[in-house]
Length: 114
Image (cartoon, rainbow, N blue to C red):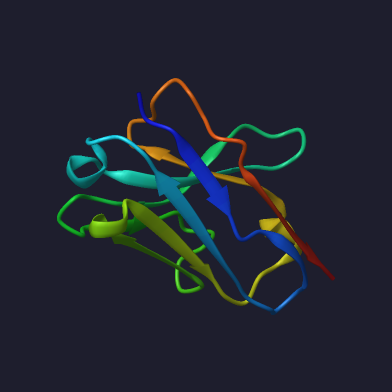
């Protein structure tokens, strides 16, 4: 069973940056496409960035040019560098495989104030 632990969130001013980390346990990490998802209050969870086991990357239009996803298979960790944060990026951020596994970590809160 895969366990996912997200960290790195916080409260920042609009325009500032944060770097999220997700440590995953389990042997499937290195062969899995990993994704960062977010859920804002009153909204459905959405995929914002994904990275395949071979490093192929995709982003949601809302974060293109501002967010960068990366992974370190030796550390079973996936990262999300978030620059130029906007108030609309405020959400709880989660990592999971893509397609996602049924269980989720606790997430990490990101709040960008205007």
